[in-house]
Image 1 (tube, rainbow, N blue to C red):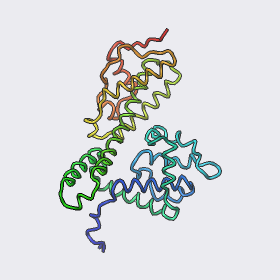
Image 2: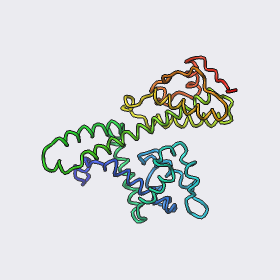
Image 3: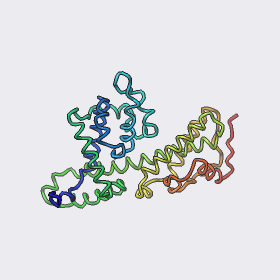
Image 4: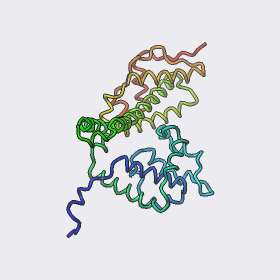
Length: 292
């Protein structure tokens, strides 16, 4: 018979922002002292991290540690792969912030245990924030807006405007990250269609596959109404045209003005690059024309 009080099982997990900060502290400590990775890798699994970029960096530590025992910083962007796009402000600035926030060495093991325990609890008792962060942000904003309307003295002391703004920023940043990956998928598809024999064609295909996997993992149901696929398509086409112009290659004249792909095409994770190219080609007479 367990002697634990019954209320223990109902303890709420730490807030998402708190666990996110723990992850940054842990990663910063490991970047500053890679030998700590050996101490924590049996305490925490890569999938315990809340974001893909944190997971990828943690997994990559053994590969980016040099013979002198320090991190080879130049190797980090390649190790992050497509996740490097998520490094806010660029990879170098992001790494500098991680190092600045690193936990003291004596706290690293505790941080690893806390992150793992929290991940286990959330997997056992998933909440809206775990399944759709964007929807959760909008839910919390609605609740906070109602609280801000209260006239009691305590409510007047709270900076509701900035708190609500921060929540909305979290939702917008996650959505814009997915949109950016969609734009890159569109750009690479148009390049492949326009210049199918380009030396970079294999790299474009690999990157499209990587971005589609990321989109499938990161897209949330609530993003459907927030993402303007037509605008993302036009930006992708524009970027493709600018990149190909350096090689005197034009994109097809009659590319559709509206996005030829549905939200499900991009987020299901089931369509191949070939299937997407065929769907794009079927929208018209897609003959790329070289500039004279």
